Image (cartoon, rainbow, N blue to C red; front, side):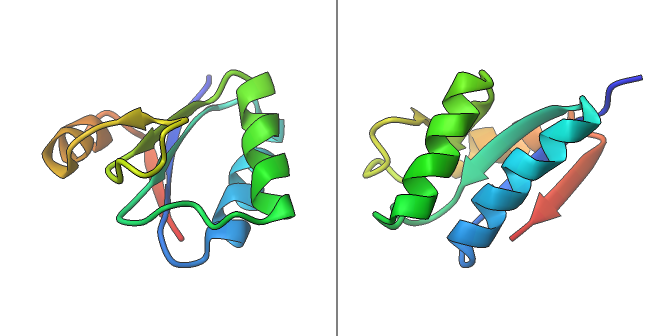
Length: 90
């Protein structure tokens, strides 16, 4: 049975994005939420986000500077988190 997992990425962006890609091996549904700031422009972050897009993972953010992600307000994100089996903060 597939589980729904939310990965909350805030301070440790490279580690959080890498981990989100890595746990896809479990064949669960993984959604990523980048919170409160723009994704740092690094090669590793770009590669992980590109991989997530290829895997058709959902990327959400409450920071309008992350233009290539679906924008949601903090309240909308809080409501969506209620539907997950696991929430992993980074």
